[in-house]
Length: 494
Image 1 (cartoon, rainbow, N blue to C red):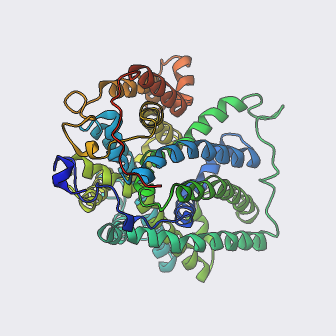
Image 2 (spheres, rainbow, N blue to C red):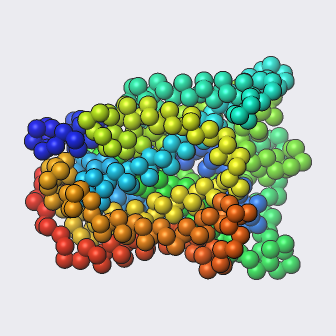
């Protein structure tokens, strides 16, 4: 499709155009490798920690993580279908429901969340370089904290160094990211087994953390409180990949067939995520024996290793963080920023914007200031992204019956222009889906400023993603009943 035939240069550029046959090179194993690569990351490893600290046993934590990922896999496969069928990214798919102008809203929501994550992962990567240099120097490096920033010069330079390493992949585009994921995924699996063998050998076993009962059993510290912990935990775990559930068409548009994206994602997400959680519990269990306390941070654990093991462990974690960050937090916002102004912003420029905002967000402050970062951050943005997923799924499956007029997605005067480019039904469904979660979010993020939020709103917030996706789906379905123009049958990919 050329920009002349698309009807509007304001909505089209080469990066947003449907993928060609030649670009569809991703097989199921590429998707599995992508997911294994993204799952094996430091925040995913430490998720189990938040659950066990919340009172769960090792088995309960692992099952919660697995269940959450099995749940979030469903919207991924549903939304990913459109990417493979029509070769379009998420920011273009959103035009069918939100309108050609309105689609900028969900694109921007997704992009800002991703910029936050990109910064957080870059901070983790910089911290590893800082730790590595400290171990090699035999002491702390960096000196006093810089006024206003809250980190020292060494930390800042290491953060910027890691940021620069990732910049190479922004310049070299999507194919460089696919190759990085495919080659590093098997390496990560091997490293997991090496780490398990190392702690088993050092600790003379795996310790008793895995067999320790939960605090919810009778007589335990939190007896009878399992469900009030389980639901917010499940929502937070779902929230962990809620961003990718939206922009998965950015990857599935490169799939050779629907079968490749379905099998690849099903094999690559829930089981590896559950296994990583199990490994985190087992390794941490052994650290109690080795160091007298539970060490959930793999960077901290690596720094305690001796000799060449420190170097190898931290280098592996660095490669891991680069591959995760690029796939999970760069590809989506790069397309999303491009969709805001396709004429001026290419995919690469979108990547540069993402990397720039990630620095300005000062991610170390997000991690430091959000009490219970996992829960406030993850549940908070899942409350925003759930309603968008609800609108996209209902629109594509129930309203359109999976039939889209691709040419009109790039036209300002086509069937997806609605009223001045905005579909008010999608906007209303989004707002109504988010509203019930706002009081609970304010209470969770700023308890001192919003102490009087009722228990009802607090409870609703614990189910934020589920509440948002359900409400927006129903509202959008009702408002769009009988309003659609049948799509002209467009040539589709199998």
